[in-house]
Length: 127
Image (cartoon, rainbow, N blue to C red; front, top):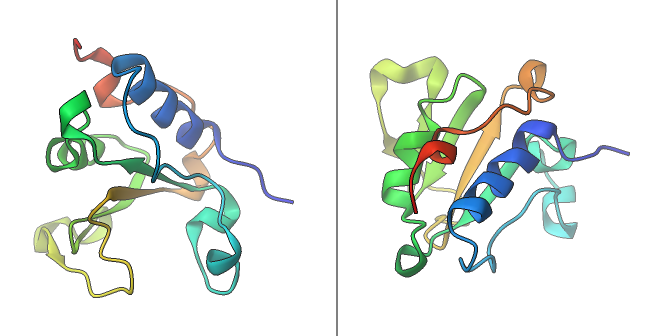
């Protein structure tokens, strides 16, 4: 059975260290029943969801841009848009999946880099 990657666990841990009182309602690592019915990086432990909570310091408008600075990232979905690092020249594009990702951002990491548990770009921010 798949386990959450070190990279994904570290991402959420770094966000919590920065903003310990943040809302975690839409956080996620492993795929739930709905994810298990389709292809999802969550099912392999190679994705995380970070709850949008600007009042507590986690503004996904900013954190999505920070995530794209990380070499482990494959793609980010946030607020009905997707950015695939392999198609960076296209920038942010409309995302039309059934979940618009307006309450959280989704970040998928490259499977080959999943075990790298180094800090995320937000780890060095001051709260």
